[in-house]
Length: 245
Image (cartoon, helix red, strand yellow):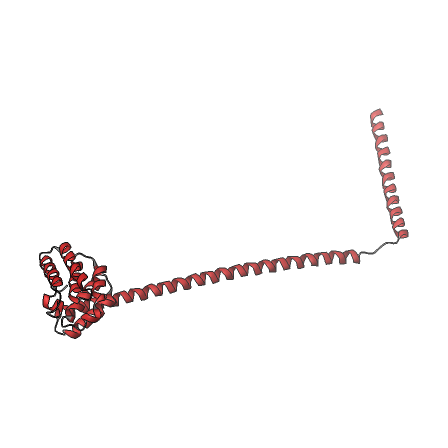
């Protein structure tokens, strides 16, 4: 941050209020002694007497920067940007605003502010160094954002592909189940049809034929039984003979 403005630049004209001049002078003395808390009070008193004072806000912002209060320092500088840009100390104003932006890691604002400072003072080497530094940080930030976006896109694409694959697998499973079910139904239907055909192909007997078939079976069984009885009788006789002998 560049040093605080002198009283003549701070007021802009010799007709400014003497009360504000006294507060700003007091604040400047305290600032040089690094009594920042006391200087803060003095500058705010001067600002109460003239809220449009560029010097009061500029010096207050400079003092807030020393206290690491970057958010409030930025607010004070932004409040007088339009007026400060027309003053002869505009290069210092934009330099200080760029410094605050760097502290906040607001690289885009820092680039813009140091560019404005160099437009008004092209030979300022410190402003050039800060501009290059902020520009490099901005490019790095943009590259990281692009990489993050690409990673997010790739991740979303992979998730979508996985979802599509899962859906296709589920669909294939369902189709296979349906096909197997249909095949089983067809096989069962064919089996039932074959059984019906076989039953239909078997000759149907009339009642008279069925009676004759039953009589033939009974006669066959009777003949078989008679043969069995005859063999048993012969065996019995044989055993009796052997017993007597």
